[in-house]
Image (cartoon, rainbow, N blue to C red):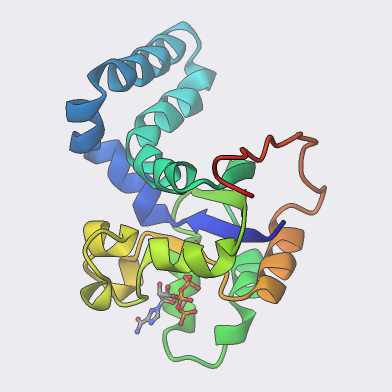
Length: 192
Ligand code: RTP
């Protein structure tokens, strides 16, 4: 089954910190309260768990992105919340090293934590790019992630592999230890 690498960029993560996703709060207030309560209690009990607090709050934003892939019928096969350094970001975007915006892009990717994910399913590379929307948010259709959440090309929330081949390369780069064993139950009502 096809896999793709999806990364929620620093702006996609950080915006959840200052601006809890109003849709989640409105549509699923209990879930939003639960995230906040878990994060708040863990932050109070043990300051080193503050990262849990940060992650719980940020889930209010990234939860919307994850749920779009889940609802479509794709399976989450790997996920990490991490900071990347300059050489790693340069490696990830090596194909764009000749572009005038390369240095700015690398600085932006290392400016805060990102969420690295692997999603699996039929045609997930192409369909994932459609769920994400056009690179330039002003060209991204409403209903896509970038169409709904972004304004600037340099703050376009999310990355998705642009081919099956690049997906394999990116998964190997971001998940060098491989993916956790998980017996996905490819639901017969989604896949024939
Ligand atoms: P991504 O790799 O992040 O999924 O984006 P993409 O395939 O849709 O677009 P690509 O051309 O590969 O560009 C990679 C990222 O570079 C940033 N960018 N900044 N003029 C600019 O300042 C500019 N142009 C592109 C965007 O964040 C884009 O996603």
